[in-house]
Length: 165
Image (cartoon, rainbow, N blue to C red; front, side, top):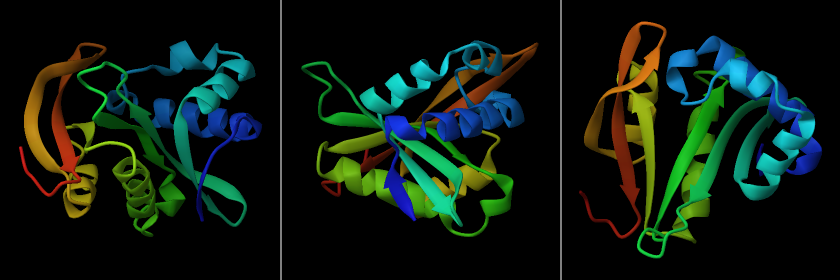
């Protein structure tokens, strides 16, 4: 089941978010060190100000994906899919696709395009996003730095009017 998370889900969200940051530090712009120090109220606030979808299987939160609309006058037609993570036990089960589809359906009612960035080495995520209709429109070279290592990011977008970049 996919549903919007609420502030009441903050403890569950905090646990999966910290797991994601620990397991795949190269995949997120934030860090475990930054977020593990945040109080539960910080995660409650995030769930109040952002639309975060959760995948629930057998009562357990096994995946998350966020939606954030741009707020500038000239960028309000766009939104970002962010914070996508699926726990290992739920991977290859279609859970990731259900999360992406839920965010895309939510976005389609609110914006003209949904954008995301993904580390260029994450082939499974690139396949998932392409299968969901996202197209690559750019590359951020050395966009992230984890320790002494740089990672490129692939910029992708889903256009709800059927156009392409």
